[in-house]
Image 1 (cartoon, rainbow, N blue to C red):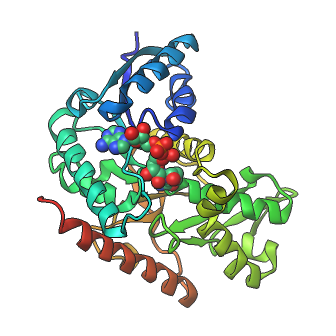
Image 2 (cartoon, rainbow, N blue to C red):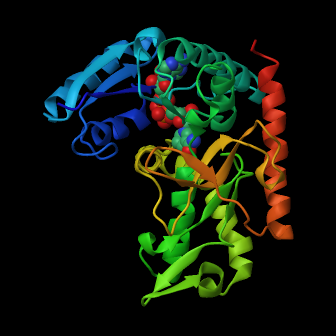
Image 3 (cartoon, protein in one colour):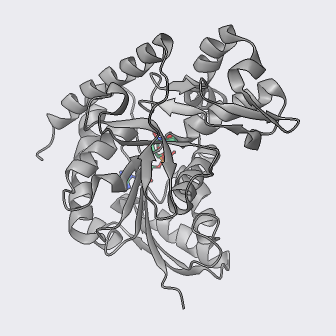
Length: 333
Ligand code: NAX
């Protein structure tokens, strides 16, 4: 029998987790032959709700679900885990300053990084979703020195999916023929969705997206704005932040990390910068990656960066350096 994969999901009582857990337990991410044990972490006041989620998971009657455990103790949730999906975070409340939010989350991800360092497998793959995702990821990574830094990532796949969809809708094609769209930088409004290297297949021919769209004004204007501000547009319309699309993006991110990228595509993930493209070393920055079947990623090298892109990429890097400096002042590494 295949050993169950131990997957921890934090923020288990939240709306993203509610959209995510079924796909995980149904084999949509790690494959239809991979049993799974879900460790569901939330804070003590939310435990009754998490217990309810466990009851529902049982009622889904999924053959791959080996076990689902609700807990408010990170040491239990991270014990011997293979995958950590760190979705839970302190939300911004009315009247809260940005620095208060950064501080509250710095403390959460400091504690979770330390618990990962002590209790998780050294091969654990960590995906940080809770915002500010890049900086929370950086803190967790720095607080877990015994785990390779390449095992930490943050979610920018939702931004990638949004960008791909916008291009596909503009061209009247399916999303799966649009490839190599890149998200650079922070999961914030300074992110840079870049189609300069993207391709689209039309009638069996591979074309550069820029040539197919034939409208640089749109690509450098409304396209960027729509993707960068999509989260706010969803909150305005739904009165709630993205959940279904966020859960789908988490599944896409983890599936690609697990099984690799297609030969003709990249994926974007926030990872620890190695200085590629002049991005300061050590910050968690979204890059285009290729991934092999051993869950090992490489930052795509050698892409030509024009002046427009350079400026946008640097703005996001400056923001991330500032977030890092602010967050590090609140914690002890
Ligand atoms: P919800 O408020 O519905 O759920 C968050 C859950 O996290 C709550 O149940 C809360 O009790 C729990 N939580 C808080 N502190 C915790 C801790 N220390 N340990 C464990 N659990 C804890 O938020 P939801 O809509 O599910 O969003 C979760 C996070 O994802 C937010 O920070 C949100 O900003 C972020 N997002 C990030 C995205 C990305 O692309 N990186 C996109 C979607 C989403 O906005």
